[in-house]
Length: 72
Image 1 (cartoon, rainbow, N blue to C red):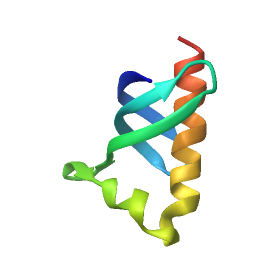
Image 2 (cartoon, rainbow, N blue to C red):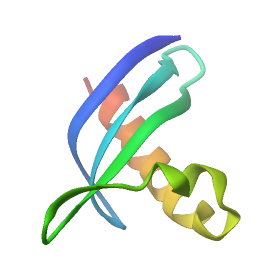
Image 3 (cartoon, rainbow, N blue to C red):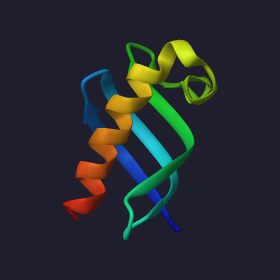
Image 4 (tube, helix red, strand yellow):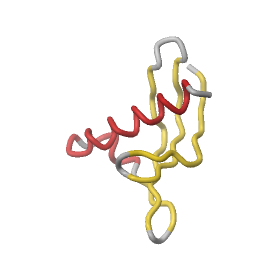
């Protein structure tokens, strides 16, 4: 697994900042931290990873992160 940090990721759920690790061979992603841009700046949304009601949002972030990381 390789560490990554994406400072600004445009997703379906908004502008996200993400840190974590990924495997470039399998494109498996594990997030350590997620933050979303709000009107007051970056808001920690790492809790999305542990709550089932946010799995759609996490899926959108995973998809955008894979696209970002594979396009590098």
